[in-house]
Image 1 (cartoon, rainbow, N blue to C red):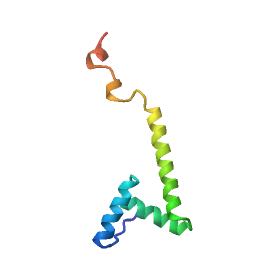
Image 2: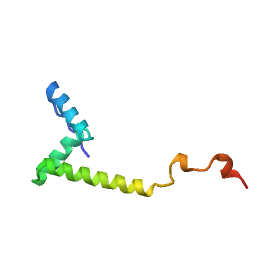
Image 3: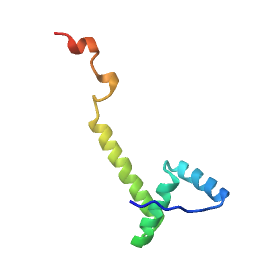
Image 4: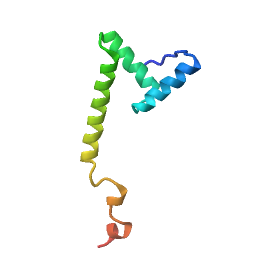
Length: 83
């Protein structure tokens, strides 16, 4: 993956950070989604929404399978070594 540098004025940067925070992502993720959509001939906003939905579904599936994997669900040290 390549890194790119983009220069924008302070106000645009501030507003883009606010917008990214509103939808729970980063400015970099917004720019990435826009560029991917641009080269694929898609609408950038719908592409981002699609990717965000996929991310949410993936995280929900991980959470569903992670039952019992949290520290509070584990045995104590004494109970673990009890014979």
